Image 1 (cartoon, helix red, strand yellow):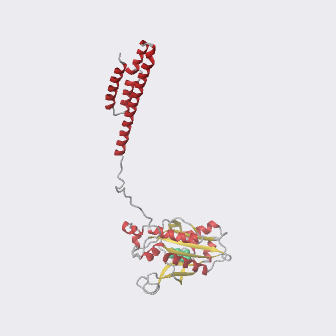
Image 2 (tube, rainbow, N blue to C red):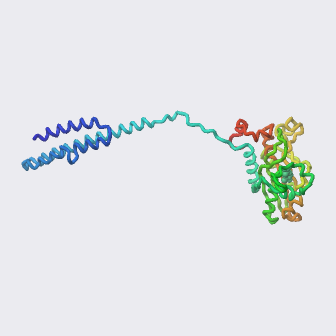
Amino acid sequence: MDVNKTIKELEVALKEALDGVEKIEALQDVKAQFIGKKADLSLLMRHMKDLPNEEKPAFGQTINEAKQRFSALIEARRETILAKKMANKLKKETIDVTLPGPSYTLGTPHLLRKITAEIEDLFMGMGYLVKEGPEIESDELNFEKLNLPKEHPARDMQDSFYLTEDTLLRTHTSPVQVRTMLEYGGAKPVKIICPGVVYRRDDDDATHSHQFMQVEGLVVDEKTSLSDLKGTLLAVAKHMFGEDRKIRLRPSYFPFTEPSFEVDVTCSQCDGDGCSMCKQTGYIEILGAGMVHNNVLEASGYDSSRYQGFAFGMGVERIAMLKYGIDDIRHFYVNDLRFNHQFKGGKS
Ligand code: DAH
């Protein structure tokens, strides 16, 4: 038997077989067939015993070398197959990074939310707590404890939606003052603002809405004066309408404060000279305020000989309308996205 010839033939057959192999699994079969235990090459070893001793080492070496060559050929093929596989994968999974991505429409907080948040920021910076209360309120907290007993004529200032004889949709955020004072039990100072939605039986038009938002403020302490109120309101005016604003207090009437004021800010459009926005007066009314009425303090458990307080209430829509020249309050409630999107972005 000519070992070298047999090996040559096997090598040619192996190369042919490898050329047709494209998958790792098929390569395993070829490997078993050519260098496995039952491969022809391995079986050749059996002839060793028939050889004279001096020829045995050379014979064994020839077969081992052949095995190593076969093994190297198979490994080389394995690498080719893996490289092809990787190249294919890369080709398939190539992404075109220049393609535009999917576009998402970004939402934006409603302008009323933003204005409210801005007012909250200002007051939290001055040490106020933000308090909220329910929109369904009792007559007692919405009116009576605010010095508005039943049949009081000033109740007409706030036409109400009653749910039962004793409950209504709150007409202002002032009942949250009462709730907080009752919660504190007359025993500690109060410094809060109360943002929220309120309801009145108004016919909707450009300046009236049956639902709107207010921010109420209340400070009660042992030394609270009108000048504290003025300073606070000036800070609000400047924060919302610009550093150059001035304010003035006009005597007015609210049942829950005495004295009471309506507060005007110099018109930001004409700087106080007079224009169509301020109806040539140079001033624009922004809120109501006053020193808390003794009856209100007492009704909520505060000793009026020891404590004084000031309070104020402002309409958020009104502030927004003045700030942006919005001419119809209904824009806030119809949710026309063309309107809402004009106020996209960080601060209002
Ligand atoms: N509650 C009043 C309203 O809705 C606004 C108001 C005015 C609140 C004066 C106050 C205040 O706390 O002192 O018309």
